[in-house]
Image 1 (tube, rainbow, N blue to C red):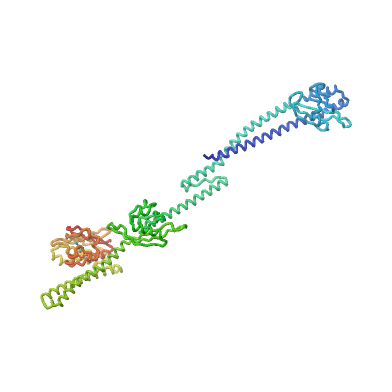
Image 2 (image 1 turned 90 degrees about the horizontal axis):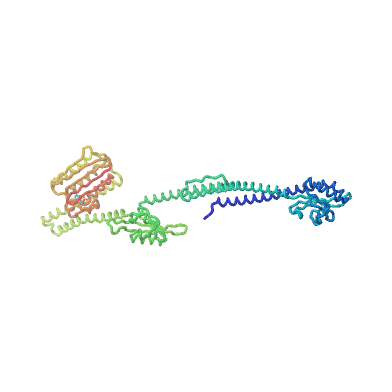
Length: 590
Ligand code: ADP
């Protein structure tokens, strides 16, 4: 567990202030002591000097009683001990003791100094009195300036020490108070230093937790202020950068997900890095679960798996046509392209782009089938015509009965050829016109168009005793190419008559709303099986070839209707159940 900054700064401050205080106190007390002692020394020296003129006479004349008397007198007045010491160290007079009982003072340091014609000073416990004393000694000289004796003044330092003690007490008391004040101040100071850092820490924690919009308060101190400033800038830049990255990612995601092409990014070890919705749909996978899994787990089509493996191995772009959902009914053809995903460190995977070409493949097949169908459709009547002509040439010509029958057949086959070619021409005309946008669209009364179409089918209908009913408001108009629409209706009504039993009814209904106009042709005929419905509008597609042919059908009628509907930007659809009749609906947008 790390200690708080406050508890690191504060003790250091405390130790420093305590040490400082201690040093100052020691120094001050030392100075005070020196000062007091010096004062005392000067005082003692002054007293000694004052006594000199009076003492020098008796000392020179060795008047011991006069010396003693003077010492007693001065000592009593000034509360100072006076001692006169002879050059040999014998005490000649003393204000506190009787000189006879006193030992020689020859070895006293102050005495020795005074003999050298200097002021001697010494502080030590007194031999006689036992307490600490201060001694000051000066030489007593005669007229020739020769030292004849030494005068010593001394005093007990007890009082001085008492004063010093009380001063020391004061110092300690005040020091203690100052120490407490300083401790509080340094606590405050430490708190003031650590507080902005603490705030920075809290701010940094918010940044770390992702709240980059938070801004730190900038403290007054220059260093911490600069730090807060830099951190704010850093957070701002990070915020901007993250926002940019997120925006880019979203953009990329939007681009990817709105693409029609399936896109799968696969890492070099074969795991899916990303996948767009189109790809997920193609391979029937879940985008969210796909990422991080291997290609084999996500894609179940072996061809595509192999393709990805091949792309991972290859250094060049690869391409392949692949069929997805082979077993299912709606097989899907895709054209897959694999390109290398490069980073600074080289190849990191592949990007597989899948184009759904099912529609193109279907068109190609329709076109191929169409050519084959046309050839086949034409071939049948041509073969038959050729056969009968050969028969005629081989001699049947001479039998008038046969030749008439054969020629009638040839005429019928020629009609058939004509019908097919007519339908083909109509189809290609409609195609061309719609491609070149040559058609003129005009508002037309639908009832008129329908009636015209019906009158063209009248003969066939009456032949089978089929009633045709038109249910269309007189006023209903639509923006159409009347002759094309008429052709489409004729085809539908013609089919309705062809594939209905005699004595039934064909109903033509028009419904119009704001969005579209619907033209429905409804019959009570044989109906169509559901399996035929998806391909019904293809060229030459017939449910029952023989029946259609015998009824004079070409298999192109509905293809033409479909085309005409598309030319009007509309659609045609069919609802039918075998045995229950069919309803064909042309929808034209308004
Ligand atoms: P066809 O010339 O053979 O009639 P179409 O393209 O008009 O060719 O029709 C294609 C096929 O759709 C027909 O062969 C027929 O089997 C079926 N069909 C078209 N209309 C009807 C209908 N009203 N009722 C039943 N089957 C129909």
